[in-house]
Length: 190
Image (cartoon, rainbow, N blue to C red; front, side, top):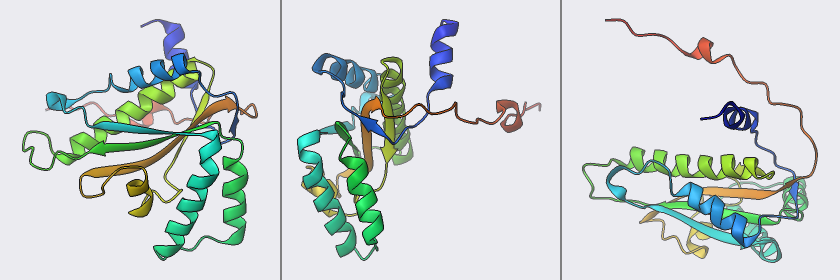
């Protein structure tokens, strides 16, 4: 791996404020191709993605806000306004889920979850290398049954893990403050 590639990876950061343009069809193909290169024990191919383009995002926002309130969670008027303002400039949301392999004793669900996380991280790294920013949101009704089901994910068979906002950065952010990895690392010696 080249030093430049490592620099790209270590300079990636989540950025909520994105705007058009989003990825082209060709770039989106590359992002999704990167996703399906994630580790995949037993080749389950469990990853699922649903694209919500800019013109459909306000309808999704309505659905998510209503579903969240119906589920008993509070969304203040200010939070609703902030959510709608943020979403008004997002060119693309990618809904993220994986199909649960319930009866697979060889691949426990935690490994399926990790595979989904790796697929999303691959999208985020590829998007960053293309000059886009991403933001993984678990708001927008992620933890309701209504939103995943409206997107085609029966919650008995799929685990919905949120949305990835993808677009051109709206502002330039300073580099993220990262911990020294050696403060999180030990060497095991028997």
